[in-house]
Image 1 (cartoon, one colour):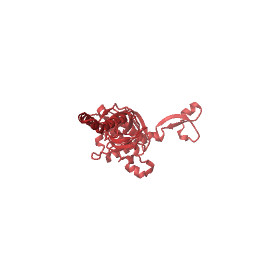
Image 2: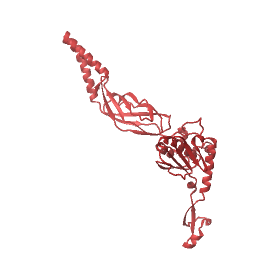
Image 3: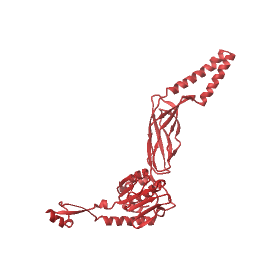
Length: 345
């Protein structure tokens, strides 16, 4: 607990008044010094009794760099009091998180802007309680943090890159949909052309060949890795390519140094959440259909028989984040033609 500048000024006035009272008589002391001293004592008592509140923080939706949102703080305390509230912001999030308010009254809000990819934690909250006259203050820290995810930027692919990825999708699907998976016993409804006669003769029962399911066969495997200072570039390239496939209606299995994530056609949320947290490390699956490798000099992409830099696959003058509204539109809400036209845009 400490006095504010105003409080120190009041103390100085009390001291001067007390000196004047001693010089000119107790009447001056009673008329000026005592009320001021009582006000100062009441201010110290009010601040001393201020209790640490509980805080509920409502965060904006996860998003992309340069998007803005609103953070709302709601306080619960037995006895309201005026205070200056300061929320702690991480380096990847900007905003003016200092608000003058009545703690225990209406919730307060402030705007934030996302600056960099990653999982960023907001908090704790510092509550600087003061009295109604602003003579004294006391800092109370409310523990607890909340996290927001900032996704990697997603770039626009060039027309040539879109065509190359469509061709890759078609080639991979064609090569895998008849890929042998395992042998199993015949069940009613199986086609006789799938019977494995040699195995059937050995076992005395019908044995059929089972092939890779069409849904599995159509999935594209993407692997990404990068140097320590190139994790953001790796995530940006992987996000751009993976989202291109899922919007084309192609499932994706993504491997990064942080693990493996699978995304169904039209569902980009698992990919974005994984890549928001992905860190540096070697490429985990060199045999993937698409391999992304980033270092300090460049981000390189390999697919099929092609290896090039990521910058050559994207439209240089169009570096923007995906519109969140577009990102969250269910695939069923679009026509097949619209999905095909805009999938890799």
